Image (cartoon, rainbow, N blue to C red):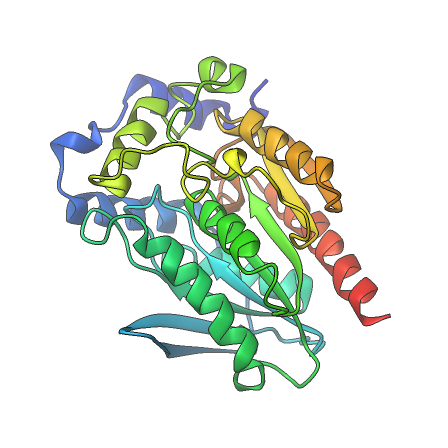
Length: 312
């Protein structure tokens, strides 16, 4: 059941659905996504500072934004990849969320503006996630205090990129103490029970998502590639401990639950959190549903435990 504070919003979305993504340009979609984000985020949380940076990776440069909270504990830095169905989203659309997360966790956040489809299809986003995490690990003191722990985190499409990067780099001793996956999308098939129950009218429409996967994958046709469908990994042994947060009324809920189970099967410590009554993308809806801020607070507590455990 949808949270009462979201009922009118969900009803409005169902009665007035947006245009199918095939009928608008990527630029128009990104503009609409940015406007939607501004309307939902509420008042931005105060932080000590933000600093727009450039990560100089092999053959390319990526914009990034470093958030330092007012009560920075100097214990951890979080590399964060935003959502947006692989085709939208940027440093500004998730600015309010990063501010809130930094304030609640008392950790520094480095949001990365990775390459988007259709201009840069698969595996560009995966490569950006892997290389950005490697870069931060090897240049840690450029972003945080010596000895700070490294957490990797993403939501929706960004969670997919982070999940894959966490597996692909697991043998490199990058010092990742946790991966935090927020309502991840885990492949283009989308055939679970929750994807049928909440297929349309709950902010993330399954048909739209499948179209976006087509944009993201371009000419790539092998959906069994675990970099595309992480549930196809045949061994996750040694992956970083995980926090997986899913929303009850999200078509992607069952995928997130399944991935948490797969990680656990291979001996990876996992904490699975389910936000009752919430829909996909709810963490950015602090302006609509104040209770989402309580969920952010709870998530921060789980992240702190991994940092403290790694420090002891």
